Length: 185
Picture 1 (tube, rainbow, N blue to C red):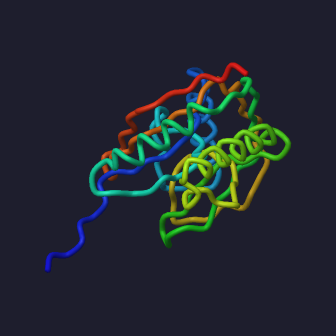
Picture 2 (picture 1 turned 180 degrees about the vertical axis):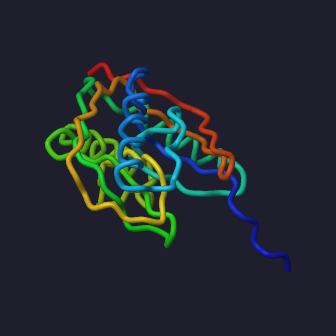
Picture 3 (picture 1 turned 45 degrees about the vertical axis):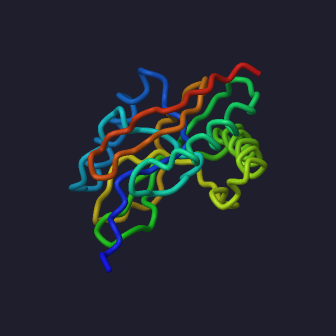
């Protein structure tokens, strides 16, 4: 009997910042890194995003899941909305690899509402196992061994105009959009 293969592919639904915003996120990550003497390197600007739903890690791309998630996403009707993150701090994680993240309070309310509506569409499509009751909107900045207590940062916000189904190649730091839906309401 052969050993199980390591996952090579991840699927998630997320939102990405407007084009000018990743540079602001990078600057904030670098300031926090310097202030707290962190060794972790900020993620590349094209990797900054908010994960709405993690649809799993797989060996190969599960076409049936992609098709079902795409059909569910196509049922969403929403207007563009603003999102804003005004705090930073570490999440718990693997020892030595703690995510330093941006978070928000009131500025993420509309994002939480949108995520709940999308979750309902995924449940209706039979993908309820991928819909968690807990959603903490965040943008991962970097990973580090050192934990950083939550602190206020200059708000970073943008208007969400679309959401994306992403194929992530694990270990290769590559995100491939495989579906995009524009918010029009």
